[in-house]
Amino acid sequence: MKVDPNVAAAGVIPLLIGIEYAIGRARGRTLYGLTGSLSDVATTAGQNAIQLVLGVSLLGMYGAIEQRFGVLDVPMTSPVVWVLVYLAIEFIVYARHRSGHEVALFWAIHVVHHQSPYMNFTVAQRVGWLQWVQTMLFVWPLAVLGVPTAMFGVCFAIIHSWQFFMHTELVPRLGLLDRLIVTPSNHRVHHGRNKLYLDRNYGFTLPLYDHLFGTYTAETETVAYGTIDALPSYGPIDNNLRPWAEMASKMRQAPTWWTALQVPFRHPAWDPRTGARHDHAEGVSDREVPADRPARPLVIAAVLAGTFGTYGLMQVGDTLPMGLRVGAAMLALALTCLVATLDGPPRLA
Image 1: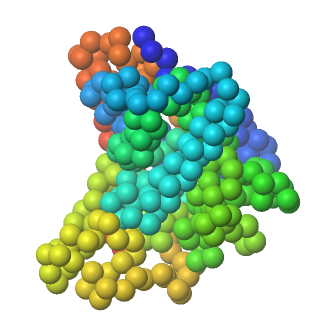
Image 2 (image 1 turned 90 degrees about the vertical axis):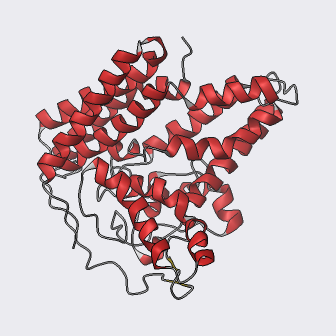
Image 3 (image 1 turned 30 degrees about the horizontal axis):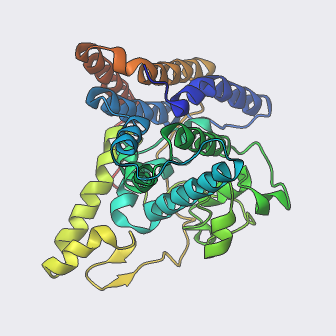
């Protein structure tokens, strides 16, 4: 059994969620919502269930490409090589992240992560069900170059583990440090739907490329979390499929087939009917989000169990028979249906 370091690092996630919830509760702050928290876990379970049934993992696919096509013998003993590989992966995740906001095709995947009106550790693991496909589209050149799977896995795990901790409101602004490394303040900006914060701060551990390419913005006003377009539902299926339906609808509205073909590769705010990009200049203060209730300790306990279970299944997934994999996928679907029931029918306003 191959141990995916990114999955192994997630073993502490349930504990961290519990700690954040307890601190927020002690301070009288509602950091976790009932339906929102369950929606995050169901979304995570859905992505893991898909990979479980297909029998694929990012590290496994990377390793297969590296072994078959790697052209260089990249040494793992040189500190300089480690630093260069780390910076290369940081750049790749910056590019992947930025494309997830500025290319409609990838936004349809990444928008799921931004739909939540909360900023907490369950949101950190909330990703679109095809996120692993987008990631593979960006990291395969490193495998072909010959960067060892172990080296890639360690650097990738460090970068994404750091990013997990950035999803919190409990850490305040940190002054000069906010400009030198990625901090919770930096990432709160990234999750903001304030006009000032749109499409900013893509870095994962270092804001180096944000500074180089002009996408860095400091936190200067209260962050309104979520997306510009109203979130109609907390239902994971709706959250994952609706962006694709909206992109298809926009393609149907295009005046020519050539314009329609451009839609997936243009900015999500691009209007094929006018050829102009709508930047929501009027702001987003009047936007409503689905109603939710503060999560109680019992709900958080369920969230912790679900988180531990879904990552645990991913860790041993390659040893399970297909029947158990399908069973795990059905449990993820059941959790998704539970969230949909709690949430009620989608709100289309």
